[in-house]
Length: 121
Image (cartoon, rainbow, N blue to C red; front, side, top):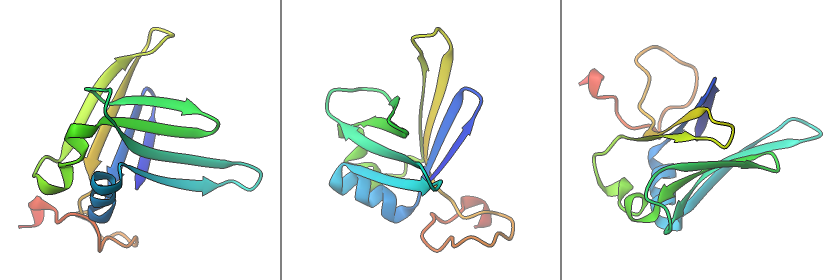
């Protein structure tokens, strides 16, 4: 799982096995160890939400996805889910959750579990 944060937007990209795990188990997490602190991030399926939602507590970013949508995400061709929320401070925060495609350029990271890029067909 990759997370990209830029300004008031947060983007999660999941590989094929991560989407399957999320659909099957209802959650997926990863973390980065900074030595004295660990930053963790994840996606969970929630039955009481109908849009993407996000929280940041105790050094963890958690993206919530509607359970009915997430349970079948692995089985369908939908690539992206997004939603813009208004925060308690009044700004708009853009949330994006997507399947991770293989890159078009030569990258050194392992992409064996990424979705095939349709632009390479």
